[in-house]
Length: 472
Image (cartoon, rainbow, N blue to C red; front, side, top):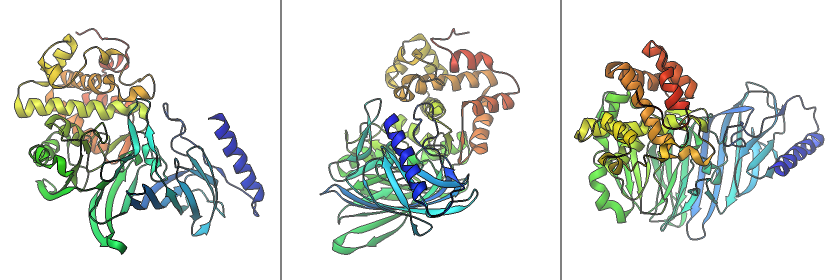
């Protein structure tokens, strides 16, 4: 890492020396110093929009892409970085003028022909090509560009989006997206938001044009390419009709039909419990088993590795409120995503079936025994390994304490304030931070403000404390 950083610094010095004009700006930071991924993201600018054009050939596994990035400089900039892992960069322009660039590890450093002034809106275009990488995470899961039996799928949590497009790859910089994906005849390309157009091209190829107007973190962007059975419907919510788009691998179509039919009910239930649905469409993508190895809350259309059970469907759709709309400021705040989405599973069980209340599940987890542990696949020992708000390392951000102990924190809040105020707090939280970022300190301050009292007895032992708290 030190060698790559030194190379980047030397390259920037050389670029500056070769410039014919005086440099008044300075390079943006390479990395936003995230507690677990310090080199992800970049400083000096804020992205408003990504326009991505991706042409993919499953036979050769080659991708050709063009990314038009519209951003605003937050300082005087002589150079800025984008995150892009692997792939060949063919050309970079800034405001239509060719720009110098260099590569070091996953950093693409761009030197515009003219300095960018603080507050200036600019467009940078990157043309790139090659065979995208599959990235292995600290927890041994894979992301980035995953090669499936009949195509591929691009997934990004936490680092993988940079395997298929250049970006300011950190949750703290959200943007709107337009994504065009060109694929061979017989294949479908699915992405975030709404399908605006399908354009025929040469040799039977087709381009699928997707528009995601609401802000989205780069890790939630998705490209799914393959043979799918597509169904389109809608559900009536308080704000009007909400489009529902599902794309299912044909080998999983029959077994997925019943559970995907529950999506409208989950949307209405979520609206009642969590507040207005934050996006203009919903849906799901179902791959065949073991193509991915996990499920992911990609914005507007969660991706499932095989047919999900109902509880998993609820979890990933709840993420549309918790994680996708209200997005963490850093990866240390992951429990705000997973704790609330896990608690949504408990609430769905309580409201829909009544076999277990959320209190029953909480009690069984704490006791370390009970049928609910098996039903919700909970390891009653692993969740005490570290506090939800203080994962020990990058691997731990997807550990049991983040999910189930995080959900226990949410239940402790409910116990402390009562049901009426609890739901007011949850709905107020999703409204106040809709389409923006928040961290744990924002959450605890908001809860205490609305509760009208300090809740240190929860934050200390349950959210930040080591080991199993004493149960009052």
